[in-house]
Length: 344
Image (cartoon, rainbow, N blue to C red; front, top):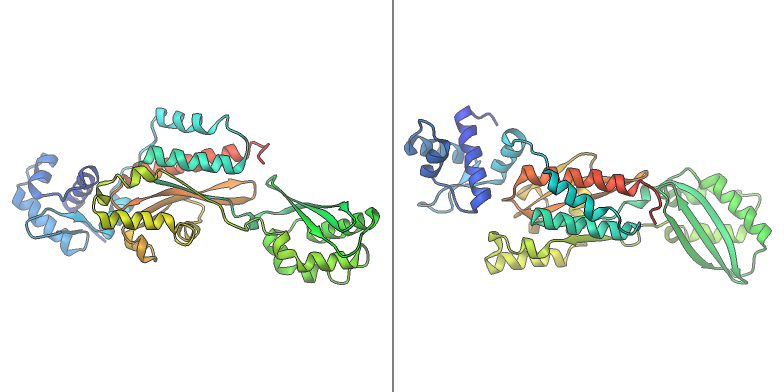
C-alpha cells in the first residue's frame, strides 16, 4: 500500500501513541505531538484517509483512532525503526541462562520465564523438533532373559533409551550382529526417514537376529519417536493478564482459555511459524479464530541439526520493535547455549 509521507508520519504517530497508552488517539494529540504546521483539522482529514484505506478505525463517532491489523502490518513492514536490546537487558538474559543445569528442559523453562519477564507478555518456548535429528548410533544391550535395552543417539548429543520385551533370549553375539545391521542401514538418516522407511531398509537382512529385527521394525513408531509429547513451556502469564486489553472480564477469560488449551492452539501456531528468520503474525493473520486478538513474534533456535521455536504472544498492541529485538537475541543466545556441549 502506497502512502504519502504525511500519511506515514501520522499513521506512525497514531500507532506509537496507542501502543504507549492503549487509548484511541485523536487529531489534537497528533498535531501537538508532531509539532509541525499541521492543524488538528488537517490531521483529522489524513486520519479519515487512513481509515478509508483500512489502516485505522474509530470505535465510536466521538473517539480517536485505533490501528487495525493492516495498520500494524504497514507499521511493522515500512515505518517501524529497528531497535537493539539495551546492555542491561542483554546482561539479564545471559545471567539467567548461564550457569544453569545443562539440561534441555531446564534451559527451555528458564528461557520462557525470561521472555515473559522482559516482554511483559506471554513468553513461549517449544521444544526442538527431534524428528529432524540424524541418527548417529544404535546400541542393543541385554538386561535379562526377556528384556533388552535399546540406546539411540542423535547427532545433537541427545540419547533415548528404551527397554524392549522380547519373546526369547538373544545372545550377546547376535545382539551385536543385529546392532551392526541397524547402524549400517539406518545411521545417517533422520528419525523421520527411519520411521517412514525402516521396513524397506531392513528387508532381506542376512545377519543378526531376524525375529528381533522384525520386532524393531514393528516398534519403529515408538522407538524413534523423540517427540512423543512435544514439550511446551510458557512464562509471564501474570504479566499478560495485567494488560489493559484484559481489564474486560470476557477478554481476560479468552486469554486464560487460550493458555489452558495451549497444546492445541499455541503449539500449532508456533509450528506454523517455524522459519529461519523472525516471524510476525498480527491479529487476523492467524488462521485460528481464538488468536484474532493476538500477535505472535517468533524465531527458531538450533540444537545441532534440529530446530525449535520460541517467541512472544500478546495483544496486537505491543512494542513490536522491542519484542522483535528480544526474540531475535533470545534465539541466538539459546542456540549458543545449547550447542556448547554437555547438554542432556
